[in-house]
Amino acid sequence: MKLIDYTSVSPTNFNGDTAKGVAGRVAVGKVDGANNFCMRVFEIAPGGHTPKHSHPWEHEMFIHSGAGEVFGNGRWNPIQAGSVVFMPPDEEHQVRNTGSEKLIFACVIPSGVPEL
Image 1 (tube, helix red, strand yellow):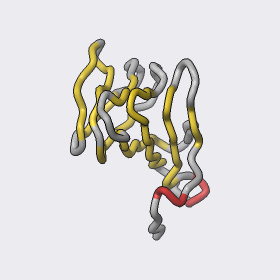
Image 2 (cartoon, one colour):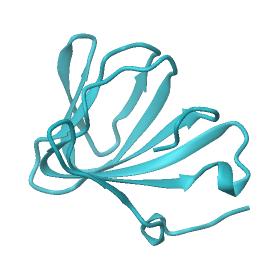
Image 3 (cartoon, one colour):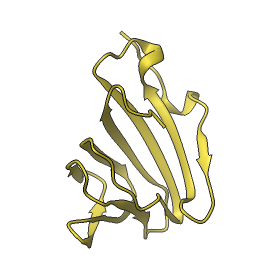
Image 4 (cartoon, one colour):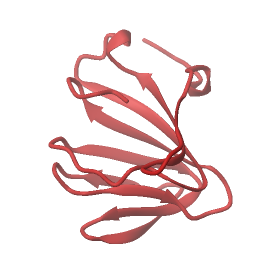
């Protein structure tokens, strides 16, 4: 078993044209012996966003705190604390923070794909 405070993991920061104000952490991954999934935690600053992208694997997101929008099905959809997002393979998606606080969410991806 592994029990951690995710903030104890050093973040990878993304702040440029394609992603702005994003800190990502691998909370549980290959180095922890996770053979099937990787759990990442992202924090997006107010006004920040992830890159718009797609990939051949599904992933799931649980919105822990904050408010924003997720692009999926060709449109922007509101999200807030307690929202759960299922993103199917190959669907273009992006997350952006439209609120005044950090948008924090956990994201689960399959093993064997880039963890961050």
